[in-house]
Amino acid sequence: MAETRVLNGSEILIECLKEQGVKTVFGYPGGAILNIYDALYKHQDEITHILTSHEQGAAHAADGYARATGRVGVCLATSGPGATNLVTGIATAYMDSIPVVAITCNVGVSLLGKDSFQEVDIAGITMPITKYNFIVKDISKLAATVRRAFTIAQSGRPGPVLIDITKDVTAGTCEYTPAEPEPIVRQKDTIREEDMETALELIRNSRKPFILVGGGAVLSDASEELRTLAHRIQAPVADTLMGKGAFDGEDELYTGMVGMHGTKTSNFGITECDLLIVAGARFSDRVTGNASKFARNAKILHLDVDPAEINKNIRSDASVVGDLKIVLRKLNARLDPINHDEWVAHIERMNDMYPLRYDKSQLTGPYIVETINELTRDRNPIIVTEVGQHQMWAAQYYKYKRPRQLLSSGGLGTMGYGLGAAMGAKMGCGDMGDPDRLVFNIAGDGCFRMNMNELATAARYGIPVIQVVVNNHVLGMVRQWQTLFYGKRYSHTVLNDSVDFVKLAEALGAKGYRVTSKEELRPVLLEAMSLNAPVLIDCQVHCDDKVYPMVSPGAPIQDAFDDTDLKIE
Image 1 (cartoon, rainbow, N blue to C red):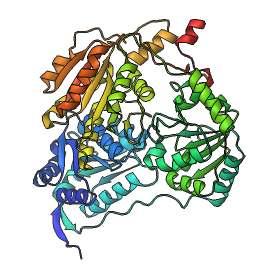
Image 2 (cartoon, rainbow, N blue to C red; image 1 turned 90 degrees about the vertical axis):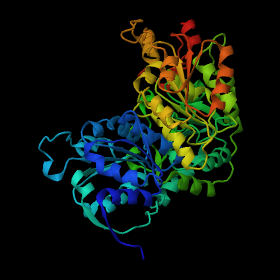
Image 3 (cartoon, rainbow, N blue to C red; image 1 turned 30 degrees about the horizontal axis):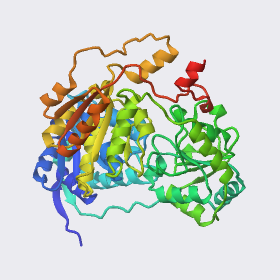
């Protein structure tokens, strides 16, 4: 029988974290959370705490940890501004269905609602951006609340959970009895036989099937089942940004990303198919373009764990609700091989007709990503990105072969996400027994400025992330829109100052390099990969490089264009 002990609230929290297998947390102390930090001090040999430079960095680090490992990421912050500084990171995790538990502390119960120093209703603030949140005012409920939070964060469609604990609860005492974590059961009770029959009939009757893979395929670990389905029915496969790596980017059936910056083959293929099998995707507007014209020639079969996503953005002809891995296993078990040679040959011809292309005469974002891919493709690195042009180049030109290999803010599009997430991912690799795994963060100079203070965190703890800055001295994606749609009126998108990222890196304790030509890139990358230390590489590229293909806002995805189309016009 488990031994019952009398502990204070802070010690109960630490014991519950240990129950859940938590090895690393990210955070920033303050007055309201001091009792918990005192307990962390006593348990520093069991739980590693990474002090970030800003609470937002802690939230992004917890997010990156969760994406890289599949485990729950944990971040801590004090009351008031400490808690509100987590909000962007919590919202980022919420939009991409990432299991994070954010733990904040508040003023004592007697001071709640009185505008006390550093008091804020963080539970109310985060209600729209959490899967669930709690405020703990009774120490007897603390252990059960923490355990429930971890279960909720991981069950069904994952997501962030917030626990706000009043300071008197962290100081009070109560009996604590250890407990085993509740097993996380894959959702299968919603998988109805009639839905399966309809899905099977649609697949068997299709002559031109196409599979669209979303982030749910990564979260459910459904890669093997996806590969089996695609090859069994000979269906071409495209992915969303969040679905990268769930299907091997070097597989012969893979056509690339879909949507605003997807390949023409993927966009045209989805437009021409007669059945679109959507595996764990939510039909984001950046994927569908003009929703009324999306996949108009196709019946749509939507497979998703969350019933709220069915018919939310795009009307489906059929759906199966349940854990994607289990749904695909059940479909595969009842499907015989189906030949679609003619359809696959047509898609292959489009691949040949519409390759991704860029200016190879100079250092560019695509060349940087392709070179990283060439040097690391056999080492299974984690590629983290910020948000913007570099993010799309990383999605287009790196060949992701495994899930959880690309970490990127897809739904919220959070500039400043990447460096914190990269540190979290690297710490997660260590906790998973793979401390030597390479972790890159690919950023634009605008994004890097958002949270570049976290380079000091990486240097303080010796976290060997490789920070690549695609530096075009502008806010590249916004400038691209200004060029194409706003008459080249570059309103506040030019970063023509004297900031020196190499000197900054050295001042913060990291190694810095500057690359100005294609010839310089490879040796610098190789040296950075050999150092096992935090490194920044400042890559100078032209301010007018653009991401192509592109679909204009509000246009259907089949209207994708690139620079050659613009020259024709």
